[in-house]
Image (cartoon, rainbow, N blue to C red):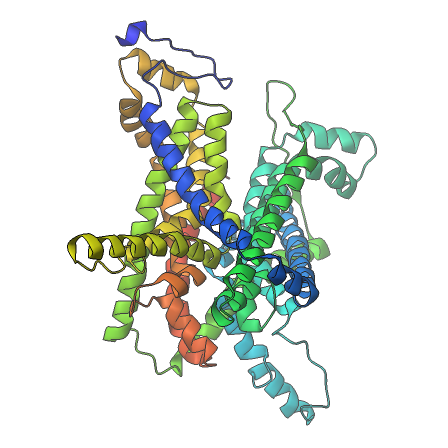
Length: 559
């Protein structure tokens, strides 16, 4: 069949873009990726089902209420904190003008380079009892250890503060983009009806930006419930720490799997509630012309308040931790250029690069399949692939270890019986299974970045390519990939840095004697050698700056 005889549809409203030749191979690849992402959760669910009811009954009577309340409290504090800081800062730098606004609108993204557990190490060093803050307080006042009260950094509130400081940029970036896309018409109409600036913001601008803000808050909440490094270091008992304690300390796989199901159900409930509250609301710009609202000039006390509100998150979330970590590194006795640290860095880069490339390739298959065959089937594949983002890395690791360990053992038994050859563990404990865990964990991030770029391409471009004789593979190679190169680069960098920061999956699944910078930082911090942990933490932060710099450049150009 020639291209001229194929059924080509130019309408962009969710119709298929090709005839029989479209999407067959990509359907197979996309569903292979989706089912691979679903495998760890299915394995955990089966382990929970065979765990019996005695375990979950015992957990419900003992630790489950505490896990639930602590997790809910942490989620509530992070959601409120990221909403307030991210939305407020986005409104100030987008809709007002004050001294330093152009610099702060870029600097507000910088805390995204830090993993929360690294921030926890820095603030523990200065705020804990032997830290510089309390030591100075005792020297100045002459107080003893029991003569004063000081907020405990190793607490639920302290963990929430660390997470808020590194996660608010999710809300900030999405809210800022939403505010910049809003037309001045609705806001000025509210002002003409007698509303002041605050009332117009609360009643018009904020509701119009709510879908973007809700998406940012949901991302922050998903990261919160999946966090292990921060809460474990602070001794906060959440579902994530409970899963590790049950599985690895107590050896109770059934109980850990049941806790993992509770955590997964909690994450999915949040996503469903967010979509339900959003409903079918859609916001369109009235008229043909989009008039961006001119920013209001702030002066005097209002300008000082605006600078303070925007500068505090940057100072607390980036500048102060960097200064503290550099100071700590001078007394660390850790040589970054030693053979050990070169190996740590090489291992981290190898894992991150392999995971980024493979995850991006899988995301392209999923995203392009949705483009070729829009509908419930392709949407279901993308939905399954995104589920891993709501699951802690350790749960994904265990969910992969269980089936592949069973496969390795069955293969080894068959080979010994049939040929007298011992194969051992071929897959379990390998680098590639660890890379697969990273792919499951961060598929949503790569797919979101790719789909964001793909959404800017009109469907008529696909139809034109098909009319010129290009099949799906040619259309992807000659049209989509060249145009979407910036989105692909962004997705690669995001996954690369997320893998560099990932701790629990690496701790569980890494091959023997194959340590990374994140593992080294965790090991030193667990031994209370915070000065030593500062060195690998600084390297992780420096690598994390790569995508942040890219994002900052895009933020600056949007003006």
